[in-house]
Image (cartoon, rainbow, N blue to C red):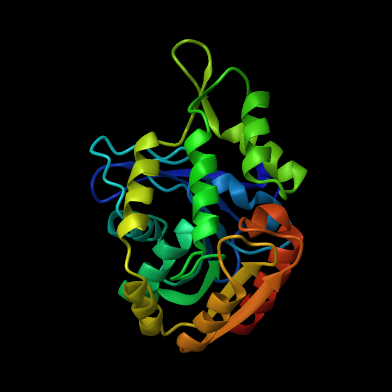
Length: 282
């Protein structure tokens, strides 16, 4: 559906004064609001979106990511980020939408579904759950800890992306590499990701309560699709099936040829299961 030229950018103020960035495309249908995972950006969805029929889509950059501002106080807790998303919905006059969240973004959209239930018509949680495979978390943390903050070239950055996302669609990585860096003061390239966000995320994961996460799922009233990459090292099939049972209106899909970052690895497959779900809820 949407080539890069079909998107436009919005820069919007959050409640605490941070300037937040979103990319928007399309004008028809119930808005689809896309929330990326840790270390990604609004550009993570492009290859999936071109496989969807025309509709209004908003892809958000979380604070500390992409072209949204870094928080000078390093306030990167999930409650603040959820309110950023709500502020973007307000600014764009979106009263009701379907929320899609990948990984960390799944935690955010689940909070919004609970706290602003009347504004959420449906929910899609991509490869995220109350229980994460310990081996998968160690792998993710090890890779992200080694990833540099400064690069000599965009090609070097792309090589790192290939290491972190080994199953990803080649064009998806090209899009991420083209949009994930800014020019540094010495002429090199710096990641747009605030290093403080990484520290905050892993600090939370070390203390997060699985019971509280399961309890959150029990409160969600909206139709909810759980998507798991068939090769995921993060979300087990057992946990995905349990999530489907715990949710009041849960359903479950597995996308082949995909790991944790389903929309990067198999964008067409992710679009197929998403479109099927949208046909039932909007």
